Length: 162
Length: 147
Image (cartoon, rainbow over all chains, first blue to last red; front, side, top):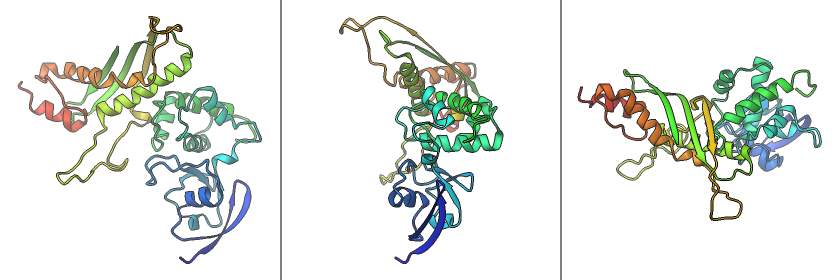
């Protein structure tokens, strides 16, 4: 299979790679860069587990080709924590028991951060529920995720990493 | 014990969950946070079973609900406000008095929601609805009601 060369930034580091045109971005991230924090749930844009940020916007990396990320800045869940210090949104998920199996969590967190970017730090329950429409969770019933996103959004106020 | 408060659209058969109450006897509760998480998560699974999840095969055995496009499971906006309470009757079968608490919320919703729907539509002659309580199922129950 012929490959194409792409240049992109992944979690702040420049990456140059030869990729097959058919590779989804998530396959490139997981199998070739070994960034396995991003999960593949449904592989068809339904579940949101593979959500990453491309040029600052939340996108499904399972239905975006790696070649489409050429020249882009990609951020995955691995980019959020600083050493052992969790990002405020991750910390909020931890404190509110917002994950059980954890499979949907990377996507939930990345979607939540995109929501904060768009709507700010004071998020109503209804707004969070509506905006997490694209992220499926099978364990938590969403209750604690909603609480965590609201708390995480507040905690991000004035935080440099937000 | 589970109690559901529902709102039914007579025109479309769509059911909206307005409020949900659970009361469980978990025996001695060691970690309330985890128990609450199990009730909440189980509730979502039970609501999915009650209201939308349906494995459908055609007559040749072809699975028709093979993706999340066709097989609906609850999303954040499908979950009702929940009030959960607990009573404690320690189990006598073990020294700690503990009981299994995993996914207890899963069990109640089909019965509680089904009862609430039939109660809401009783005056229209509806005596039963078929699982899952999709708009189609509830609409059919309304159409075949005697009144």
